Length: 443
Figure 1 (cartoon, rainbow, N blue to C red):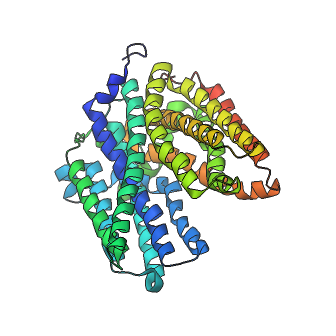
Figure 2 (figure 1 turned 45 degrees about the vertical axis):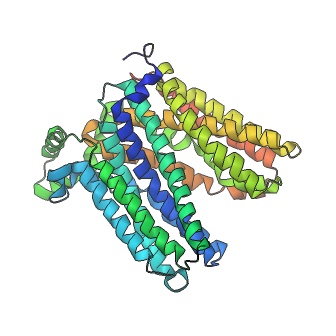
Figure 3 (figure 1 turned 30 degrees about the vertical axis):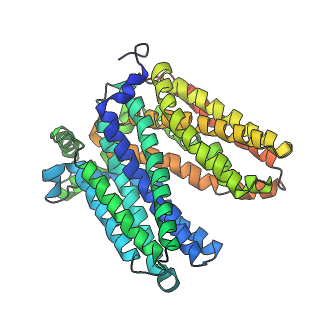
């Protein structure tokens, strides 16, 4: 399929519906450990510091590549032979999330905070682990030579993630609010039971997603294992940990591989700096929580979904590397729009324009970024390599963007200059992308 003859009809491929479901399964746990857990603790009047420190459980998403090789190789007894390697892992991890929610339904933050946080960490670990195999199953729904479908699938996966997170969050809050209004004092505990029902529905849908049950991947992994001059468990361990890395460097070359790693680490740091501080900026500009909800959350979700789909189509038509260049520049320009907000009087029109254009740029950048990583992976080690590359991007955003508040303080609250700096942060990644732009057959 060439760039020229691709149309939006590619999104109506039956495989896209499966990928949409996988994305929703991936996004939904963020409702549990993000929105639900935070509001549950807040309703019991725990301090902001306690709620903030509880958010450290999200750190596991940046290191899930450490155990990705094991998920790529270890089979779940009985389930793997019945439903497939990928689905057996997803369902097993969903079961852990389900059991954790049931345990939450018997606990109170006042008396059992440590246990609640531990179970939240268990949910986060299970979620980060299932993302490894969800991404692999999503990539494997499409043949390696279907570049256009891969780009479309990446955009649908992002749409699915946001749908699982936003729609799942809306349902959760509606249920909790209704149960509280009608007089249930344990409304959050009952809401967790409702979330269990949603998880069961997700898993029923998962069973209808086909999975490649051939032994091609296992045979290729076995061939790599046989290359190690070690016996038994040692050879298995070395091939499980080392082969995905050596495969990546052999495919791209050492220099290009490090340039790719640098690009992935740096590409979305400016966006992360802005995102980490954006709500504080809106508040200091005098916008109410309702204003923020309407413009940043409500309209933002619609914009993200719409332009994620269009971004995938754009990546197909123009090529992934060109889409990354354009979206990187767009992210920088929209960050500068926030500088105009900071240097202007309060304006809802400017606020809406800045937020919507920022979501547009972020949607384009995300789908191009996900497509780029998806096309890089070796199908022999899909889960491991995708998890490693995606984690590099997450680590860059989480590690460096944590200093965003300190940067604003150092600038003595000069928000305009702060946003200019965040715009400039994309330049190093685009320089790296320039050096590797001709090294791929999917440019």
